[in-house]
Length: 160
Image 1 (cartoon, rainbow, N blue to C red):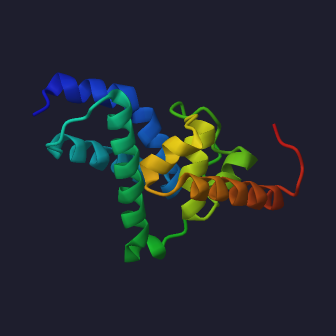
Image 2: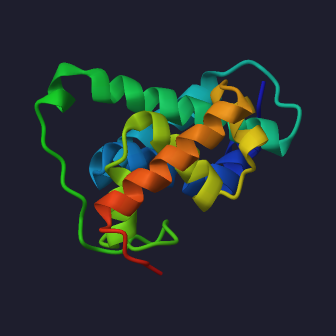
């Protein structure tokens, strides 16, 4: 069983990653904050032990992704049209109004997590494969297809 100090330490290490990943799915600050809270409640209830900081991070990424996908499947969310806010968030490395980030957020779900983990978190494709439970070749395909979609959505122009 984790102590309160352990939970606080894990939260401090990973809250920004969980927030950015949840926002990439939910595109709404209020729902993202609720999702982050729910993910960390699941951590508190989780009885398993983590072998390393990377293992706990992978668990949180998987938990966040699954939680957000479940939310998006709900009837309420399917009827709600979310817009990306045009303000910067202190928890993100990029402003939410950024055209590239908006295009990433608009990617189909199967690409979004791989793109986020590769470009925003710096994971290698074999590490992403382990986290999302897909072969490394599938992750590479997702990244390639996502880049192609991004080129199309951004008009083929070079963006920095």
